[in-house]
Length: 248
Ligand SMILES: NC(=O)c1ccc[n+]([C@@H]2O[C@H](COP(=O)([O-])OP(=O)(O)OC[C@H]3O[C@@H](n4cnc5c(N)ncnc54)[C@H](O)[C@@H]3O)[C@@H](O)[C@H]2O)c1
Image 1 (cartoon, protein in one colour):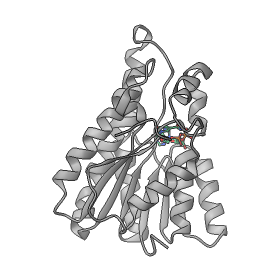
Image 2: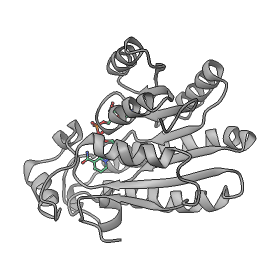
Image 3: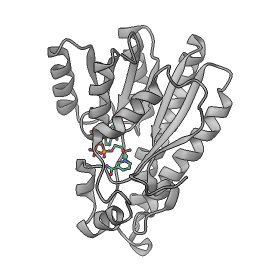
């Protein structure tokens, strides 16, 4: 087991990639905090993990709220005394639209949920991880942040910024026992795709050399490895999981 005795917070873990990650973490021996705005679903997952004799709790969290993030960390720390792993996974795709149709509200919502949340969570947890001289942070970016997807300008911008943020923070804490990495999935079969048009999804799938979509469990496997002590000399990197779409 890769995560025995570790405590992990996974944001946006009520469903999709986050839920697959929370489940895999639990199976690898971690206690898992499922942080999501959708508390009924988060509690359902926590309950099913507890029923299977794993350790999990759900905490209602809007990742765009600094107050919610502070409450999340406080509650998790109180319950488990330490936090070893943070996965910044919560996110939205927004709607597919050309630049002329992007509103200030579209832009603001994207930046606050997909980008500012990563800043809030990392800023809040770094002092804790520094004090324990240990941490693994994994930020879920996107292939859109590496290559840019047309009609997804706010999303591509936010995810590119998450990659830059990851590189900068990793260097800042490189002497503190904290590793910070990102992953950049291509199209993964989750409910997030319902926010886009079928044409937009097809555009993205057509660019995947393996010719298929990815599964949440495949992303969870990469995140689990990055969250483990197996990774000790890699930080500030964005790991690809795109079926060959990105060659860098
Ligand atoms: N599915 C894909 O094709 C794909 C590709 C690349 C990157 N990603 C990224 O992976 C991450 C997870 O996406 P997914 O596909 O599992 O999506 P999803 O829609 O299935 O799950 C997203 C989760 O985030 C939660 N969430 C949304 N807004 C929140 C908020 N303000 N506060 C807290 N929780 C919130 C939702 O309730 C949900 O449980 C996102 O960051 C997404 O951008 C997904």
